[in-house]
Length: 147
Image (spheres, rainbow, N blue to C red):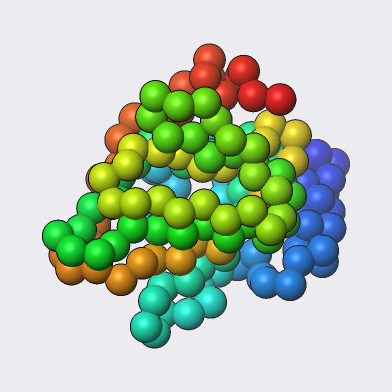
């Protein structure tokens, strides 16, 4: 029970340090994440903008954004420390103020550092027939090499 209270306190501390709300547990996409993430829709008009918050060690699976025309995703890092990695490249550390432009067709993952909460705004770039292809989890060996 005490461990749960510590986790709630940590979440409260994280939420209090942010401009955007953490939102609710990201249950709709939980199958594509290792660890707990939270989702707060900020805008669903013109372009989808969502605050995604990752508990320490949480990351999403490798995935690809697809679209016939346009599309992709932009990450705007707003709190904590995280990582972004494209297939075949080294992981890139992310901190508040960093921006990542993810073109259509690029296999990648993103999430929190092992010892830090992390939040980014996920901006859905409008496109025709857009979708996500969710792939394998980021294995512990790859993730364990991050600092």
